[in-house]
Length: 351
Image 1 (cartoon, rainbow, N blue to C red):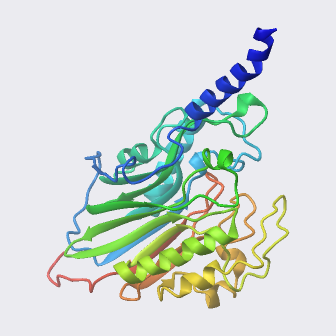
Image 2 (cartoon, rainbow, N blue to C red):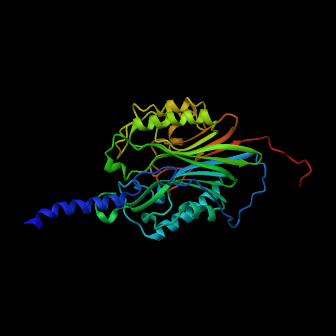
Image 3 (cartoon, rainbow, N blue to C red):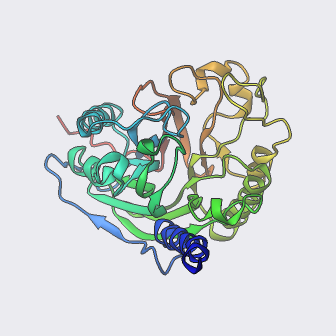
C-alpha cells in the first residue's frame, strides 16, 4: 500500500528531473553566452579593397536550412545528406550574390535536427568569410517539439543568429530580449530568446555599427516593446545598419491577416511605425513597396505573400540598390542591399 502511495510522488520527481535537464540552462544571458569573434583563413579568400567604397549587406532567415515547415508545422526529420546538400547549394548562392556582410537568423550551431553541423562556420569556410560572430539565442538539452509524434522532436538545440563578414569585426555584443510574458513558464523555458546582435565592422578607415536581430513573432505586445528598445539603442549608440527578421509588415501592406494556412494577424501591429522613429531609412521605403508589393515579399519562400525582412540604414550611407533574391533553401527569401560608404578612388593610369 505504501509503495502504491509512493508511485505518484516518484513519477512527479522523475518528470521534474527530466524537465529540468531538458530545458537547461532555462534562460540565457551575457555571462552564459560569450560574444566572441572567430577568425578563419578560408581558401580562396581574396580582398584587395583595403578601403572599400561600396559594401553589400545581405540578411537571411535560414530556418536552419530545413525550408518550408521549419517552424514545426510540417517538420519531419531529414537525413544528414539533406542538410549537407543544402549547405553546399547555399555556399554557391552566396558566392553568386557576393555580399560583404551577411546577417543570418535561425541558424544551427550544434543541433540534433541538423546533425550537429555548425552551419555558420561551414558557410564561412566554404564561402570564404574570414570573420564570424555567433549569437546563441536558443540552447536546450532537449526540445519536445513538434509535440507528436515523439520521433519528430527537435531534441538538442543550439541555435541563434550569426554575422559573416569579409572585413574585420572589431567588437561583438549580444543583448537578449525578454521572453513573452503572455506564455506560461513551462513554455518559455524551451522557447528561444529574441536578440540584438551588435558588431562594429572595420571597412578600411571607416567603422560601421551594425545590429543583426530576430524580433518576436507570436506576441505583438512584446514585438512592439522590442522595437522601442531598438529605437533607443540606435539613437543612443549611433547604430548605422540594422538587418534581420522583424516579423512585421510595411505600413502600406494591403493584406494584414487571413494568410493561407496561417493565423498571423498584423492589423493592430505598429512595430514598423515605431521603427521609423529611429530616423534610419529602410532600403525599400514604403512608397516604393506600395508600387509593387509582391516584388518585395520575403515569406514564405514557396508562395511569398508578405514582407518580414528588412535592412535599415543611416543616411550617411548612400543606398545604391536593394533587391529580394530568389531561393528555395529556406522558408524566407534573402534581402540584399548595396551601399556606397565613400567616394571611389580611381587611378587614371591603371590598365
